[in-house]
Length: 460
Image (cartoon, rainbow, N blue to C red; front, side):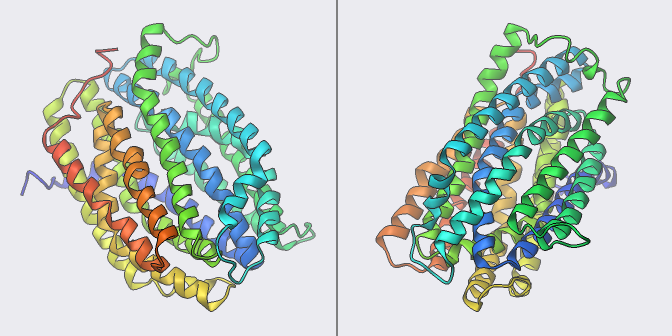
């Protein structure tokens, strides 16, 4: 049993890394739930419009995540080697790439806002008004664009801090930001304390304000602690990244960037396939995904912690310790997801009652939440396996494992079932989720064969 379970010291280490991430994501997702409920009070159209826009913005945020992940793998291993100059180069690479991605995203959203949102309004008309849904989505998106650049910069800083095992500060900044977001949501959505009643526009303004607050905290704190984080000293003196490292990061990082972009676009496409059943499905999926994000923080945090813990071990050359640690963390993350799934499924009918929408939407959302709860163990293992494989720089494998699988298997299946069968939304959704079992089998084989073990900084 000691092969799969650690001692008290081991779990103390895992929790010290995972809990700050969990708290940050948990409070952020809880505020998103409250935000969602507040917008939901405005009606089904407002909730659906915001949901569609957030699906599109989700693609951008995952591209940022993918963009910083490649240099992040190198930064984590440089940290294990105690190479501050290497971390500084990785930081510069992230900043340049994130600014480029933000500029591209803003351009795409400005030019294609109506067309992109309309993709989700082509199904059978349910209880809502598609024209009003479109207008609410456009109003929300126009304001949210102002928050893309501060979000990108914040992720560049926060990611680099986490790669040096500093998870508390990003957590604290996130907590303050979500508190600001929640407060301004209440003030601006409903027009409280003399503030204008702005509806979905108010929700967008509140989010943008919180983005700038989070940015200010992370940047100021990092620059005020230069002795602790020497990489920031001289980080802006030039944009230099050595050619050998630039090529290595591009080689390892490009599959991750493409993976996250394609995966998030795939999830948007998947939801578009589901929306073919009716426009009510959009609102139901919005409710269920918001609730799921509350529950998945446990295995998401522990899965993400694997790369933070294992990366430096690979950088220092301690492969056997990396294998042992990864195995135990995967088991812990998967068992945590089982517990989360049981609770989620048992309470699935409670949360939709918080929304001001019709009974059909609430009933559909409850069933979707139940299905997600039952599938949590699958999600937990896949997530942990993904970060284990990624920690060793096997980014091409993670690309094939993640987004390639989605576009080659899951999305074609959803497309065919949604357009060429009369299968109701719940069994359609369940079928598409259970396909992930194939990934579990593949991941188990890859990890057991140790194909992910690699020190990439010595090869750069």
